[in-house]
Structure formats: C-alpha cells, structure tokens
Image 1 (tube, rainbow, N blue to C red):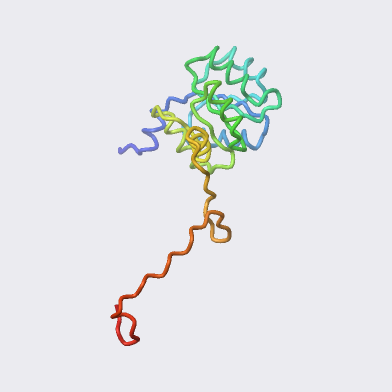
Image 2 (tube, rainbow, N blue to C red):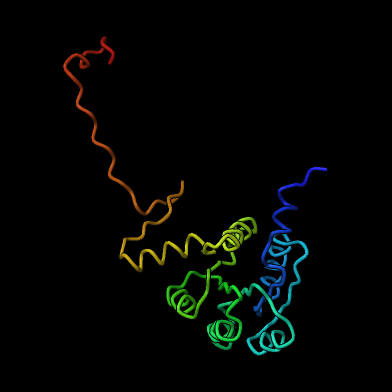
Amino acid sequence: MEKTDASVMARNSKFQSVLIVHDDLQVTERLRTVVSVLEPRARVLVARSCAQAREILARSSCSLALVGMDLPEDGGVSTILHLREAHPHMERIAVSALPDTQRVRAAVSAGVAGYLLTDALDTELVFLLRWLERGGAAMDPRVARCVLERMFGTPRRAPASSSTRRCRRPPPKPKRRSPCCRSASSRC
C-alpha cells in the first residue's frame, strides 16, 4: 500500500500539541481548523487569556502556541514573554488582524518565530506553519514587507488592481518611427 504525502507529513509534524491563545471564538475555530489540516491528530488546547494559558500549561506541554496580539490584557506580549521564559522549547507565533508595525516589533522583540494575519486564507496559514516546521519563519508576506520597509526604509508601493492604481508609471513615450515606416504603405 502506497503512503500519501499528507500521511507522511502528518506523521512527521512536530506540532503534536498546540495552544491557541485568543479571545475571538471565530478566529480560534479557524486556527483549530488550520492546525487539524497541519496535523490531524494534534491535541489543540484553547485559552482566552494569558492567565488561562498559564493554567493550561501548568498541566500540559505544547510544541506550538498561536497567540493573539489583540488580547485585551496587553495585546499578547506578556503571554509571549511568559512562554519564552517558562517554555523555551515551544514555538511561538503571533496572530493579529492587522500588520501594525508597533505590534510586529513588540512580538518579534518578545520572541516569536512568526506573525500571521487572521485574514489570510487557511491554505496560506498551513503553508506558513509548514515553513515553521522546517525551521523557517512563519511570517505573512504583508508583515514581512512591513518589516523590510522598516529595516531598510524602502518606499511602500500599493498593490495594483484593475480599479485603483496608486503607483502609476508614466506612459511610455511613443517610439520614433524610422523614415521607412512613415509611409502608410510600408510596415515595420
């Protein structure tokens, strides 16, 4: 019997036990779904606050924590700091609705291995968490762009869309036609 890639990846997943720390029930359920795709047999524990996360981790260990940066207590920073100190083996990922520069900086300083945005597609979240499993950073590309712009001061270009383009290039100048192309009968 042939093994599928999904079964091999699931068996090799290092995220067998995951803690989700978030106060929004919809976000929590989405993250639970993402984790179940990443590792179908993963044990998922949910805390709605930093205090509840500490209680859960006093009884259980986890290999991954997805921490909401929108927590009412402190935006998740103290939770990440606590996890870094008390559970240094655990991977910590910040989760937020916005790629706010101050929150990203605070999360990175606190010791996260990634920063995910809640409006990303489930497949994108799974993809980024797979990178984390392989030793990479689980960083939403929009957050990575903010970090790079902050580090190197590169100007931000708005994404082009069919309806609105903020960064327009000037139209190309018409090419000068050679004398042989000026006549209506000749074709270049």
